[in-house]
Length: 113
Length: 112
Image 1 (cartoon, each protein chain N blue to C red):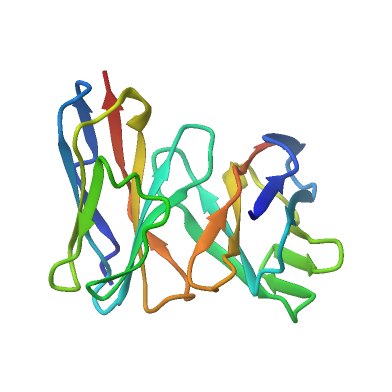
Image 2: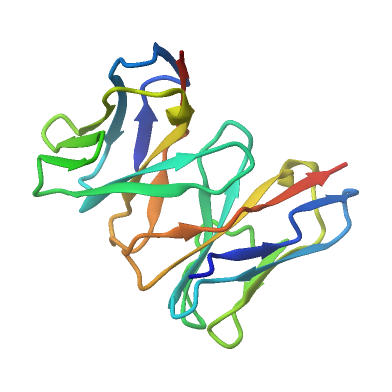
């Protein structure tokens, strides 16, 4: 069974530029999560989808971050404009449904200069 | 708001010993708690889940306890091996039971 796929694996941008990350969850998983993990910290949930609807986006900085999951499968997370403090690893995870075991992708490491 | 503390940032032990990692939480009672392992440059990998009505869960050399009175979970790795060296994350279900809140993690180093 294929795992959660993410791309790109690494990205370096300058502040005020925009960036987008892509996630393909495990087939059949209804729930998709985006996390931000700053060095030395645990993952922090940014947004959670159930199929193509948003379950929780309370910690998403909506002035600069956006995410969509248009057909209830793949998802993209965008940052526009980026700030220095956005430097982190962005992890995507999926689960069969809410409250089930989460399976994580390898993450996208973002460096904002 | 919910607060999770993992006892230490780093734990160093010798091969063959038992590693014990601690996760403390405050302000609410989660329906379940999970432990994940994270290796450098990789995403977390699920290890064990324990529910609020369970005292202990085991899987091979791993054991998790959940004390809802103390608001604490202990994670044990018996007969530790250098391959067990990684960061271990404690994660609690949020109050709705729909998502996870992660601790900062404890980095375990097992020396041979």
